[in-house]
Length: 169
Image (cartoon, rainbow, N blue to C red):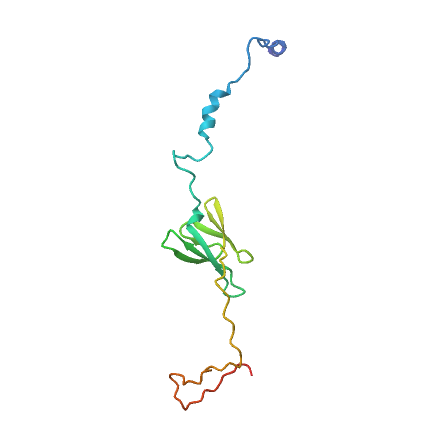
């Protein structure tokens, strides 16, 4: 009997329609009240007045060059720490420079690059190419006389004859 009474009660509750929405209510939102959130930029790091963004950790390092002692050895990067009395480090991939800067990768040539990582930030340093100083002096001819003036050479007694040394003959 109880089940018979509850079913009609349920049907009655389901068939009753909700009240119709009022036509006088308007669903307008004023976004001006959210302007303060946009002005403060909640997802950017806090910045004090007059202070710009902080420089990257990589500005304290200079990539000097690369070294490879033999064919089987890994490439070693030469890194200068400008903030630590210009200390020079010789490091390979996977090693750390200082306390928390790790070396991710080193490419030797062409265009040597060094990738450093500190926390979530990574930085790529490239090897600076420097202008050439000048060409090497030309080699002396093979038949050149070491003493073209005929004057005695200091430190060699006058009666001693010098024997020329030629390699590979």
